[in-house]
Length: 154
Image (cartoon, rainbow, N blue to C red):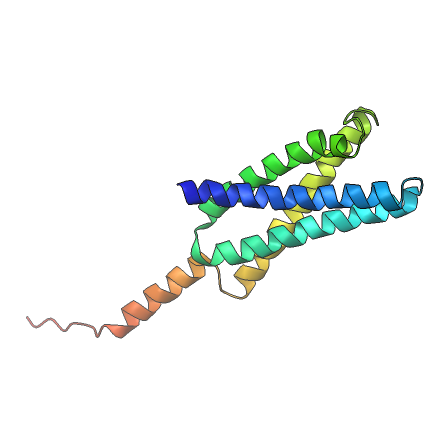
Protein backbone atom coordinates (compact mmCIF):
# COMPACT_ATOMS: atom_id res chain seq x y z
CA UNK A 1 0.00 0.00 0.00
CA UNK A 2 2.88 2.33 0.79
CA UNK A 3 4.34 1.86 -2.70
CA UNK A 4 1.00 2.69 -4.26
CA UNK A 5 0.75 6.03 -2.44
CA UNK A 6 4.38 6.75 -3.14
CA UNK A 7 3.72 6.35 -6.87
CA UNK A 8 0.73 8.69 -6.61
CA UNK A 9 2.84 11.26 -4.77
CA UNK A 10 5.69 11.05 -7.28
CA UNK A 11 3.29 11.52 -10.20
CA UNK A 12 1.60 14.48 -8.50
CA UNK A 13 4.99 16.03 -7.74
CA UNK A 14 6.14 15.55 -11.34
CA UNK A 15 2.98 17.19 -12.70
CA UNK A 16 3.36 20.07 -10.25
CA UNK A 17 7.04 20.46 -11.17
CA UNK A 18 6.08 20.84 -14.82
CA UNK A 19 3.73 23.66 -13.83
CA UNK A 20 6.28 25.37 -11.60
CA UNK A 21 8.88 25.19 -14.37
CA UNK A 22 6.43 26.79 -16.83
CA UNK A 23 5.56 29.53 -14.33
CA UNK A 24 9.23 30.30 -13.67
CA UNK A 25 9.96 30.45 -17.41
CA UNK A 26 7.03 32.83 -17.91
CA UNK A 27 8.06 35.00 -14.95
CA UNK A 28 11.74 35.25 -15.86
CA UNK A 29 11.59 35.27 -19.63
CA UNK A 30 8.22 36.55 -20.77
CA UNK A 31 6.85 38.70 -17.96
CA UNK A 32 5.20 41.31 -20.18
CA UNK A 33 4.57 39.26 -23.32
CA UNK A 34 1.14 37.62 -23.14
CA UNK A 35 1.49 35.73 -26.43
CA UNK A 36 4.71 34.02 -25.35
CA UNK A 37 3.24 33.28 -21.91
CA UNK A 38 0.23 31.64 -23.57
CA UNK A 39 2.53 29.50 -25.70
CA UNK A 40 4.51 28.37 -22.68
CA UNK A 41 1.26 27.56 -20.87
CA UNK A 42 0.07 25.55 -23.86
CA UNK A 43 3.38 23.70 -23.88
CA UNK A 44 2.92 22.97 -20.18
CA UNK A 45 -0.50 21.43 -20.84
CA UNK A 46 0.95 19.33 -23.66
CA UNK A 47 3.74 18.07 -21.38
CA UNK A 48 1.20 17.23 -18.65
CA UNK A 49 -0.82 15.24 -21.19
CA UNK A 50 2.27 13.44 -22.48
CA UNK A 51 3.43 12.56 -18.96
CA UNK A 52 0.02 11.11 -18.15
CA UNK A 53 -0.11 9.22 -21.46
CA UNK A 54 3.27 7.69 -20.67
CA UNK A 55 2.26 6.73 -17.14
CA UNK A 56 -0.98 5.16 -18.35
CA UNK A 57 0.77 3.22 -21.09
CA UNK A 58 3.27 1.80 -18.59
CA UNK A 59 0.85 1.10 -15.74
CA UNK A 60 -1.94 -0.13 -18.02
CA UNK A 61 0.12 -3.10 -19.13
CA UNK A 62 0.45 -4.70 -15.71
CA UNK A 63 -2.37 -3.27 -13.60
CA UNK A 64 -6.16 -3.37 -14.16
CA UNK A 65 -7.74 -0.14 -15.33
CA UNK A 66 -9.71 0.40 -12.13
CA UNK A 67 -6.56 0.45 -10.03
CA UNK A 68 -4.39 2.68 -12.20
CA UNK A 69 -7.39 4.90 -12.91
CA UNK A 70 -7.85 5.61 -9.22
CA UNK A 71 -4.12 6.25 -8.78
CA UNK A 72 -3.95 8.64 -11.73
CA UNK A 73 -7.14 10.44 -10.64
CA UNK A 74 -5.73 10.97 -7.15
CA UNK A 75 -2.42 12.24 -8.52
CA UNK A 76 -4.15 14.61 -10.94
CA UNK A 77 -6.41 15.95 -8.18
CA UNK A 78 -3.45 16.67 -5.88
CA UNK A 79 -1.40 18.18 -8.71
CA UNK A 80 -4.38 20.32 -9.77
CA UNK A 81 -4.85 21.72 -6.28
CA UNK A 82 -1.14 22.45 -5.97
CA UNK A 83 -1.04 24.00 -9.43
CA UNK A 84 -3.99 26.29 -8.90
CA UNK A 85 -3.44 27.27 -5.27
CA UNK A 86 0.31 26.99 -4.59
CA UNK A 87 1.84 27.50 -8.04
CA UNK A 88 1.01 31.20 -8.34
CA UNK A 89 2.36 31.87 -4.85
CA UNK A 90 5.77 30.49 -5.82
CA UNK A 91 6.24 33.18 -8.46
CA UNK A 92 4.76 36.00 -6.39
CA UNK A 93 1.21 36.08 -7.75
CA UNK A 94 -2.16 35.77 -6.09
CA UNK A 95 -4.06 32.57 -7.03
CA UNK A 96 -7.27 34.59 -7.28
CA UNK A 97 -5.64 37.74 -8.71
CA UNK A 98 -6.97 37.23 -12.23
CA UNK A 99 -10.54 36.79 -11.06
CA UNK A 100 -12.86 33.82 -10.90
CA UNK A 101 -12.87 33.35 -14.66
CA UNK A 102 -9.13 32.82 -14.90
CA UNK A 103 -9.11 30.63 -11.79
CA UNK A 104 -11.74 28.24 -13.15
CA UNK A 105 -10.28 28.38 -16.66
CA UNK A 106 -7.01 27.01 -15.24
CA UNK A 107 -8.93 24.17 -13.62
CA UNK A 108 -10.84 23.26 -16.77
CA UNK A 109 -7.77 23.45 -19.01
CA UNK A 110 -5.73 21.30 -16.63
CA UNK A 111 -8.49 18.71 -16.42
CA UNK A 112 -8.90 18.71 -20.20
CA UNK A 113 -5.17 18.18 -20.73
CA UNK A 114 -5.10 15.41 -18.12
CA UNK A 115 -8.14 13.66 -19.58
CA UNK A 116 -6.74 13.90 -23.11
CA UNK A 117 -3.40 12.45 -22.00
CA UNK A 118 -5.02 9.56 -20.15
CA UNK A 119 -7.37 8.83 -23.04
CA UNK A 120 -4.61 8.88 -25.65
CA UNK A 121 -2.34 6.67 -23.57
CA UNK A 122 -5.03 4.11 -22.85
CA UNK A 123 -6.50 4.06 -26.36
CA UNK A 124 -3.06 3.48 -27.89
CA UNK A 125 -2.48 0.70 -25.38
CA UNK A 126 -5.80 -0.94 -26.29
CA UNK A 127 -5.20 -0.51 -30.02
CA UNK A 128 -1.87 -2.32 -29.70
CA UNK A 129 -3.45 -5.06 -27.57
CA UNK A 130 -1.04 -4.46 -24.70
CA UNK A 131 -3.49 -3.52 -21.97
CA UNK A 132 -4.02 -5.72 -18.92
CA UNK A 133 -7.40 -7.06 -20.05
CA UNK A 134 -6.18 -8.02 -23.52
CA UNK A 135 -3.21 -9.82 -22.01
CA UNK A 136 -5.53 -11.74 -19.66
CA UNK A 137 -7.76 -12.79 -22.55
CA UNK A 138 -4.72 -13.83 -24.59
CA UNK A 139 -3.41 -16.01 -21.74
CA UNK A 140 -6.86 -17.57 -21.29
CA UNK A 141 -7.16 -18.40 -24.99
CA UNK A 142 -3.69 -19.94 -25.03
CA UNK A 143 -4.49 -22.01 -21.95
CA UNK A 144 -7.73 -23.34 -23.41
CA UNK A 145 -6.11 -24.09 -26.75
CA UNK A 146 -3.23 -25.95 -25.11
CA UNK A 147 -5.40 -28.56 -23.39
CA UNK A 148 -6.72 -31.27 -25.65
CA UNK A 149 -10.39 -31.97 -25.42
CA UNK A 150 -11.16 -34.91 -23.20
CA UNK A 151 -13.11 -37.70 -24.86
CA UNK A 152 -15.86 -39.21 -22.78
CA UNK A 153 -16.98 -42.76 -23.61
CA UNK A 154 -20.39 -44.01 -22.73
